[in-house]
Length: 98
Image (cartoon, rainbow, N blue to C red; front, side):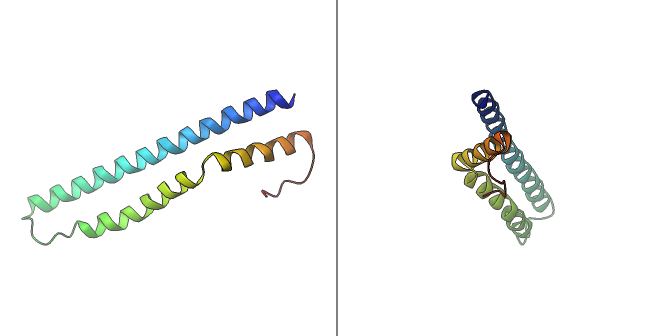
Protein backbone atom coordinates (compact mmCIF):
# COMPACT_ATOMS: atom_id res chain seq x y z
CA UNK A 1 0.00 0.00 0.00
CA UNK A 2 2.85 2.37 0.70
CA UNK A 3 4.18 1.89 -2.82
CA UNK A 4 0.86 2.95 -4.35
CA UNK A 5 0.69 5.89 -2.00
CA UNK A 6 4.26 6.90 -2.76
CA UNK A 7 3.60 6.75 -6.50
CA UNK A 8 0.51 8.92 -6.09
CA UNK A 9 2.39 11.36 -3.86
CA UNK A 10 5.25 11.63 -6.34
CA UNK A 11 2.81 12.24 -9.18
CA UNK A 12 1.13 14.98 -7.16
CA UNK A 13 4.47 16.60 -6.32
CA UNK A 14 5.54 16.53 -9.95
CA UNK A 15 2.28 18.24 -10.87
CA UNK A 16 2.92 20.88 -8.19
CA UNK A 17 6.45 21.45 -9.50
CA UNK A 18 5.11 21.91 -13.03
CA UNK A 19 2.49 24.30 -11.68
CA UNK A 20 5.19 26.36 -9.93
CA UNK A 21 7.09 26.64 -13.22
CA UNK A 22 3.97 27.71 -15.09
CA UNK A 23 3.17 30.25 -12.40
CA UNK A 24 6.65 31.74 -12.70
CA UNK A 25 6.39 31.86 -16.50
CA UNK A 26 3.04 33.68 -16.22
CA UNK A 27 4.54 36.10 -13.68
CA UNK A 28 7.50 36.83 -15.98
CA UNK A 29 5.26 37.29 -19.03
CA UNK A 30 3.05 39.68 -17.08
CA UNK A 31 6.12 41.63 -15.96
CA UNK A 32 7.36 41.93 -19.55
CA UNK A 33 3.93 43.01 -20.86
CA UNK A 34 3.47 45.62 -18.13
CA UNK A 35 6.91 47.12 -18.66
CA UNK A 36 6.58 47.09 -22.44
CA UNK A 37 3.36 49.07 -21.99
CA UNK A 38 5.16 51.55 -19.72
CA UNK A 39 7.97 51.97 -22.25
CA UNK A 40 5.38 52.58 -24.96
CA UNK A 41 3.77 55.30 -22.84
CA UNK A 42 7.22 56.80 -22.24
CA UNK A 43 7.96 56.81 -25.97
CA UNK A 44 4.58 58.35 -26.86
CA UNK A 45 4.98 61.12 -24.30
CA UNK A 46 8.30 62.39 -25.59
CA UNK A 47 10.93 59.91 -24.35
CA UNK A 48 12.36 62.30 -21.81
CA UNK A 49 13.53 61.12 -18.43
CA UNK A 50 13.32 57.29 -18.30
CA UNK A 51 10.81 57.16 -15.43
CA UNK A 52 9.64 53.68 -16.48
CA UNK A 53 12.81 52.23 -14.92
CA UNK A 54 11.46 52.88 -11.43
CA UNK A 55 8.31 50.73 -11.75
CA UNK A 56 10.31 48.19 -13.77
CA UNK A 57 12.81 47.84 -10.96
CA UNK A 58 10.16 47.80 -8.26
CA UNK A 59 8.17 45.07 -10.00
CA UNK A 60 11.34 43.07 -10.72
CA UNK A 61 11.87 42.49 -6.99
CA UNK A 62 8.80 40.25 -6.48
CA UNK A 63 9.61 38.48 -9.74
CA UNK A 64 13.14 37.74 -8.52
CA UNK A 65 11.79 36.49 -5.19
CA UNK A 66 9.31 34.26 -7.00
CA UNK A 67 12.07 32.85 -9.22
CA UNK A 68 14.25 32.22 -6.16
CA UNK A 69 11.43 30.44 -4.35
CA UNK A 70 10.77 28.20 -7.36
CA UNK A 71 14.47 27.45 -7.72
CA UNK A 72 14.94 26.64 -4.04
CA UNK A 73 11.95 24.29 -3.90
CA UNK A 74 13.69 21.64 -5.94
CA UNK A 75 13.86 17.85 -5.69
CA UNK A 76 15.07 17.85 -2.06
CA UNK A 77 11.99 19.75 -0.94
CA UNK A 78 9.78 17.40 -2.94
CA UNK A 79 11.41 14.37 -1.30
CA UNK A 80 10.84 15.85 2.17
CA UNK A 81 7.19 16.39 1.31
CA UNK A 82 6.87 12.76 0.20
CA UNK A 83 8.49 11.53 3.42
CA UNK A 84 6.14 13.66 5.53
CA UNK A 85 3.13 12.39 3.61
CA UNK A 86 4.32 8.80 4.01
CA UNK A 87 4.74 9.24 7.79
CA UNK A 88 1.24 10.68 8.02
CA UNK A 89 -0.20 7.85 5.96
CA UNK A 90 1.32 5.06 8.02
CA UNK A 91 0.81 6.90 11.31
CA UNK A 92 4.39 6.99 12.57
CA UNK A 93 5.96 10.03 14.10
CA UNK A 94 4.57 13.48 14.39
CA UNK A 95 4.36 15.79 11.44
CA UNK A 96 5.63 19.21 12.42
CA UNK A 97 7.08 19.84 8.98
CA UNK A 98 10.59 18.86 10.03
